[in-house]
Image 1 (tube, rainbow, N blue to C red):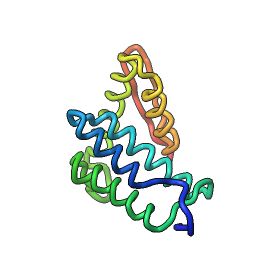
Image 2: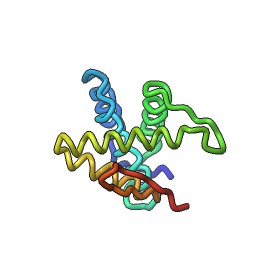
Image 3: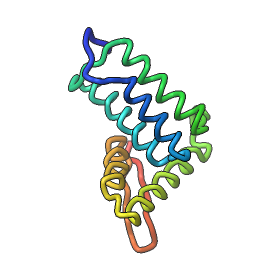
Image 4: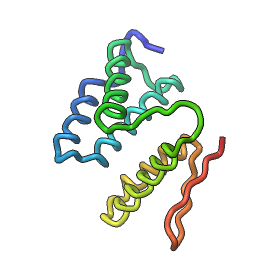
Length: 134
């Protein structure tokens, strides 16, 4: 719900998404910034953060544009058409890559953001698996 003032600068957020993509199509960084946008939406929804109508519209537009138009994700509607599995495998791969590169902050952020969506990751010697608790 938009308020009269805003604790979030959506233009800066949009600029950071664009900068990540202009950095040799840095998809992991772009997704990291997009996760921040999702976190902001959740904070606004919880009442912990305020956002005005202009910043909310730009935030939503930026997330939609980068997620669908630039990164090429699609919304296949109801049911799992393999999109969910594909996205989860991509995120797990990005998290594993972050851990190998000792970027534990990004690895933890991916795990924590998924946990907010009730997605649990389980790491083992054979790799990482995930489950969703509805």
